[in-house]
Length: 318
Image 1 (tube, one colour):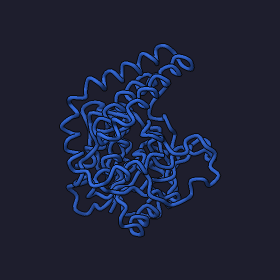
Image 2 (image 1 turned 120 degrees about the horizontal axis):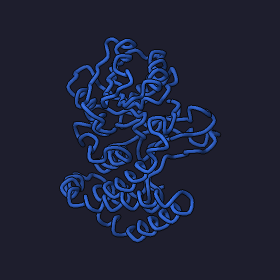
Image 3 (image 1 turned 90 degrees about the horizontal axis):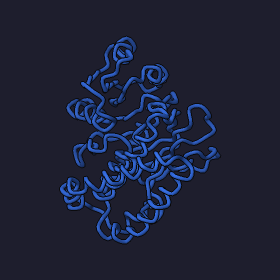
Image 4 (image 1 turned 120 degrees about the vertical axis):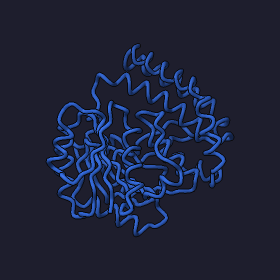
């Protein structure tokens, strides 16, 4: 049995397409767990109509992605029949064989604890949205592998990679018992990178399965009005992710590159976007620096439980 955890905030129009694709799955042993961030658009009632046996966890306000999926994960950990968890954004449409191929991959690759999938652009399905997450060379910023590229089979190789985009990713339930759940301090953006990094440090593996396909309306759950917020949160959370997860040697080695990359990025914000976006980015970075002390206990625990070498970690920086 697999629990499909869907975080939602006023995503009724997206849920209609998402739910229709779930109903068409060839693999039927699943439960829907909707975690609703206090929507006001009828999402909850619609879910009750479409999936009367679904579990609906209603929150009292919008707590963001991390807190929402954690509620679903904690619920699933207490369900004895649940072996796997699929985290699924509400703005995704699944290929009919999506669940079956994901489960079969776990059975074929028993050392995998996370399965990354091939996500294509919902509106132009010849364009790649995400083929797993990676860290740019020299320990740089996180990025979606293949994003924006035309799909010509360049990411059709089954392989172990750094991590999975939690917009659509399979997890063995036990990994959450071992390394914990998503860091709610992230609220939204890069919380899946943080989780993948923690999994990597602890010795767990993420396997990319290109035959497991879905279609993503990237940005469908946000709007142009939230672009500044997204920029601010990404800059903030990048600081938190690095402080928590980078072994000291790697952090010190790459720190000059980190600093140079931020300067370049902020210059590009001013040149290509607006001064307002630059201010949001700088504010996010400063907010992240202000939270460093709060991350130290987390860092100590993560690094104490690290089970892999520095060279192994660096091998996943593309």
